[in-house]
Image (cartoon, rainbow, N blue to C red; front, top):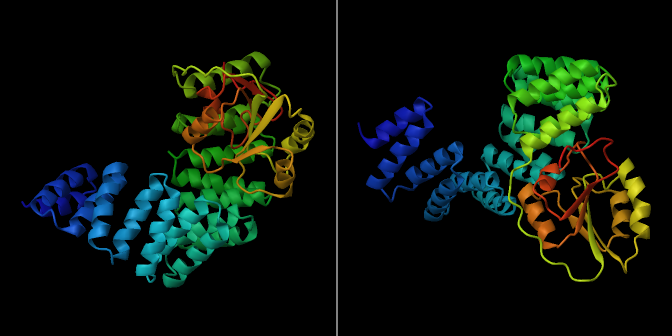
Length: 401
């Protein structure tokens, strides 16, 4: 059997490892076949071999500069690799070449939504649905973008339409339940999350969201079990584990010793055993203090820290704020006025944020979130500063040594 035939057979069987091997063999025999190179890149992207995927897709796109389909695949691979800025540029190029393809509008919307540009993302998803009204992936993405932009009622309507067509879509039930919960419809949200679990019993998301709804109803023992199911299904996700710990803090049946021990388990599981690079010798001068929080916005943490920022002695303390804020507001703007060194880090990965703090020479780094939502404890786990403090946002230990 020829390599091309073996490739088709492997793809039909869903055997991507074999498909990659056969695509490589076929490309060796026909190195100028740009479609084969693009297919190899797409297979590698699905396997998570992003470096190879990017190389092959870029070569295929440059060989066929007029192919919107190939530029689209290259843009998706860039987005998966974390290069959102370049992905946006490449997907714009793909759209200019093939504006009639709904998948490109959907993929471009995903990149825009990832950067918080909800208005343009929503427009992309609507265009994709205009081109193909049965494009359910775009329908789901539209619902998520509407929800994240704060238009909860429209998001609920969007998910209802999706579930009418695909009642077995577990991910859609998960998103629908989260939207219902945001509207305060906790009983309805609980039912939606239980349906999500029924369709996707091995996914942590349904259990995590069920835990949130149960916690908000005061059903703490049930919430704890739901969170534990989520952690059992993805023990590597520190955020899921943080949600479990947050739940414990509300439960009077859990005593202090058990709570501390369970927080220390989080540290043992998620804090890497790294040899910490030596910190530089700091010369005399103002103490460089960094405050890291997702809550520099209309939030109780912001109300408490504002007077601290106002009254820091600038001769003795150089204040840095690392704002992991998805959507800034008037409170964000007001805090900025009091902080000489403001850093918007919402789009930074944990690794990028760690390197940024190290490069800034921060001597005392203050965590203001603990195990609350959108925390960056993995950055502290890597020891981003020589002195690290947790304060204000969480009423219990982080568990980190």
